[in-house]
Amino acid sequence: MKTKIFLNLPVKDLNKAVAFYNELGFSTNPKFTNEKGACIVIDENIFVMLLVEEFYQTFTNKQICDAATTSEVLISISLDSREQVDKMIEKAIKAGGVDYIPAKDYGWMYQRTFLDVDNHHWEIFYMDESQIPESM
Image (cartoon, rainbow, N blue to C red):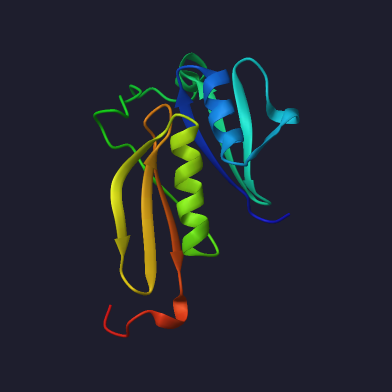
């Protein structure tokens, strides 16, 4: 079996969170979805588990942070072009997300950032590895 990544994120309103990610073009896996959580398919081996806060809390003894004021994690996704990065940000804004940090263009990498409807921080970028400077 190939390694799979499951990012688990607490959400306040499951239906709103699922609708947000579906608007970005990601599908929902019904096998792992119920009233407590939903599985969003990012790629073949990458998934986001959206868990209502009460259910999320059963997996940890730590307090759930307020993602509006505290950084919990930076989630990054690479796309195939700068245009795809811009389109993803446009979709995120249209679906209720926030264009969080102005675009950064390093020449070899183009990056934009959005916050989802629960204020989780997403870095969306395009990188041309053939253009990475030798002195990084």
